[in-house]
Amino acid sequence: MHLIAKPLLKWFDQFGRHSLPWQASKNSPINPYFVWLSEIMLQQTQVTTVIGYFNNFIRHFPDLTALANADEDAVLAQWAGLGYYARARNLRKCAKIVVTQYQGEFPKEIKAMIALPGIGESTAGAILSISFGQNHAILDGNVKRVLARYHQVKGHYGQSTTLKDLWHLARQYTPDTRNADYTQAIMDLGATLCTRSKPDCANCPLAAHCQAKKHGTQSEYPNLKPKKIKPMRETAMLIYRNKSGGVYLEKRPEKGIWGGLWSLVECENDAKIIAKMIAEFDTSAHIQQKLPMIKHSFTHFHLMISPIIVACTNTSKSFQSIAELKVGLPAPVKKILAQLG
DNA sequence: AAAACGGGGTA
DNA sequence: TACCCAGTTTT
Image (cartoon, rainbow, N blue to C red; front, side, top):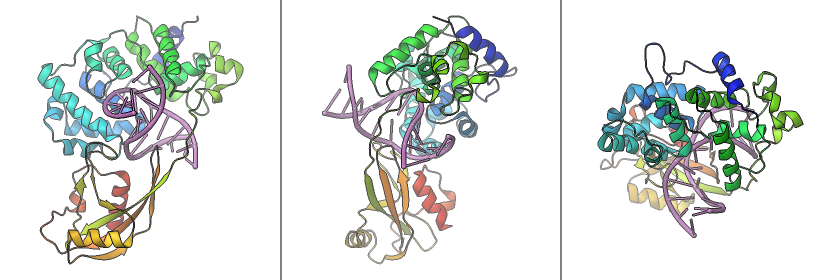
């Protein structure tokens, strides 16, 4: 078994990312709140995108206490566009727990860390390693790709045996010296050289013993998950507008699609049903304009949205000014509202 | 159009 | 324990 830590750390010292906003610097020691926040954001988004969201987020919520005390809608508003909104809700829940049950300091036991909402084994390992210098293995998407190629690991990530194999390898290679740097280094390698397409093997410090490189099978690893055909669904979105241009939005339930976000009223895209919905909302309302259909794709289905502008006079409802919205909106709703001007 | 990303939830 | 689910960006 060839060790990968040594060449990897040597590469990291020269080419790794050392000045990200959540990393320690000369003037600022490591901040576990920043590390945690960045790890959660990085679960779903690339570094370049996360930087902007991260800086914005810490401006609004500079520390754990600020986040714990914030309204859920205020948190979701800053998270909007990142997707997976359950994570933003978990972020706030987690902050509350750390403030009330752990005196505002993250627990330093990995089991306690994993018990916090939104933190699993990999994220817990990364936070404890980077924040407190503890020795833990991590297995994020970058590490999975590096190890799957390095050992030509068979099977896709959806299979428990594959994940077991990858965790085994991850633990095996994780060093007990410079663990924090190693954690950052292997993520950096996956993010910058060992990329999904066109890996830069010529500059890779691990190329000498990489099985995929040796056999020219880089594009076959990691093995892809067998794909499923996504069903198509359809909905009408009613854009209720009052005379001053305000729109009527509803907060969606916590569970399911766009949980906790504010969205337009939806109904079946059928003239009779739409007419009924509108009449129930406001007896004097009428359809003003039908906008072009928008297609939005999710992991499990495609959604065809027919946006319909409805002019309203009912003043008993609460309309919001589009320009001053301070709530999280689903991406297609944001798109529709942007068209209204 | 397809793939990815880690954790939570459910059967 | 083994799936199933979620939203957006990137390729």
